[in-house]
Length: 445
Ligand code: SF4
Ligand code: SF4
Image (cartoon, protein in one colour):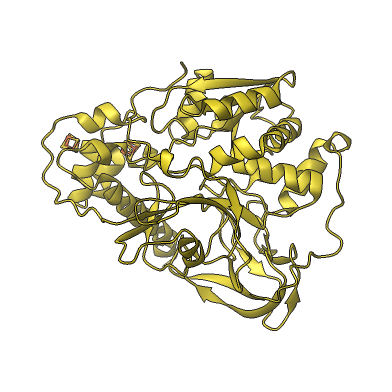
């Protein structure tokens, strides 16, 4: 079975929500739409307080004065109503981000003039890319990289392979699994549209062996359409881009490099569905499926929610128990703990994990057991990185290839000394970024 080197086998916990069909939550009374919920140039608001907006209307566009604005994605109103504020608000990604706040008028009225339903066979690659860009689609697995950029490689980097990342290897999360079961044909159509935009000769699906029903459904929908569905070993982080590419193609993305260096583009399941809806139906990205799970909720669920819906609404719908100790945006391995439950669902919010007990391990000095080295899928020395970070020695951390760490959490998971390695890695990267940002100013001064 296809797989990558090293990695770990955490308990899956997917049984909590995997059999819960996708359920649409009612649109909330108010949505908060951050101008930055993607990698790249933030948007600037195109509306002001008091404006009436309709569902699907652009409320934020890439800053026209920024020369790098191609690497960005517009933000659309996910409900119809009135703009009641344009102001900084906390989001799951940052403590303060400029947001457009819309109060629901209960009409749920679409904007007139959105692109009409279209047969994708009538569109060329550039028209497909333009529709994806206009719809504000970004990688919905959490990375948030604008999709139109990912499928517009420079001419010197030809792409021959497109991979649908159907691994969903994070424990607990089941939103992609439900989409694969319930929206199978549309996911495959979205994948084929992406394949057409990229003009690739290989279209692959990588799915873990723990989803046999989704694998069978995808295989059936893809039959005779030039798509190869590959079963991968159940191992974390099978869905990380570099690991999935290696598993399916044996190509190795160089350190610090992108998948396009080896001729590959990877897209996730929810993104493929969003592409299909944008290209075929003219629908901008205004909603997504979010798994709400963990021992802190009475009813684990997979909700279809409008972007901008407060986390609290999802948690209440999943009957969160009183006194829960921890809420994580994403899964337990790569998710981010959230303190404010009023932050909004953004394009990359795949799950909310609610836990009764917050683990507060007492970490100790490294005992040089080497378990983290055996687990690291990037072939790094997490022990060396952790010792350097603990000593606040950024140079030593950089020399141990800190920047190649993608914070998968395997090292932290296996460490018997409970060392908070990923926490330190995040700190060291943030410090390095601060230092880099200060460099030109120091030179100028
Ligand atoms: S978090 Fe970084 S150092 Fe640790 S196992 Fe993952 S890639 Fe390796
Ligand atoms: S697993 Fe923990 S204790 Fe063992 S070598 Fe790595 S950092 Fe040190």
